[in-house]
Each structure stands twice: as C-alpha cells, then as structure tokens.
Length: 110
Image 1: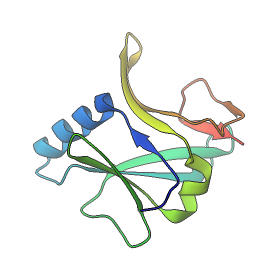
Image 2 (image 1 turned 90 degrees about the horizontal axis):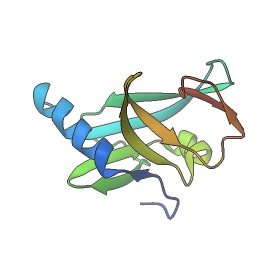
Image 3 (image 1 turned 120 degrees about the vertical axis):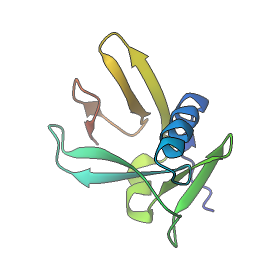
C-alpha cells in the first residue's frame, strides 16, 4: 500500500456493503478518475471483484476502497462519503485538490 491516502468514510462503507450483499459481490468499491464531465475530470464508481496490481487499498469496517495508480495522483487526500439528502443519495468525494467542481458533484477541475 502506498503512503498516499484516500479514505472511505463509514457512511460509504455501509452503503457499499449493502449494495455488494444484494449483488452477491465482494465489498470492494473502485474509484477512478476519467477525463470529461462539465469541469474537466469526473469520478467513476463501481464494484470490483478484486484489487488489481498497483492499486491503493483503503479499508473501513471490512469494506475496501481501491484506486488505480493513475487516478491516485488526482485523489490524494480525498474522502469518499455516502450522503443522503432531499435531492437524493449519492457517493461524494471531498477532494482537497479540486480547484472547482460542478453543481452535481460528479466532476471537478484541478
């Protein structure tokens, strides 16, 4: 594991565990960054079957968050949370490197 940190909040860990159980998959959330979105970069979430070589692995309450080496540089210091509000529920990345973001919270700029 790298010294670089990305953290999975307990709220996100609980939601991943619930989704994974319903789909009979391991409780592993993959977070990556892709080009695109209204601000230049966008977050991509998905369940993973296993970590890949070179992934950063963070664990909270038995749930693993995996981030590939390429995305890691754009996510260093981030916290992944699961937030429920009147507008809906979603995973949210609090990224200290993001200079700006869009209203939906799914994309950001550095």
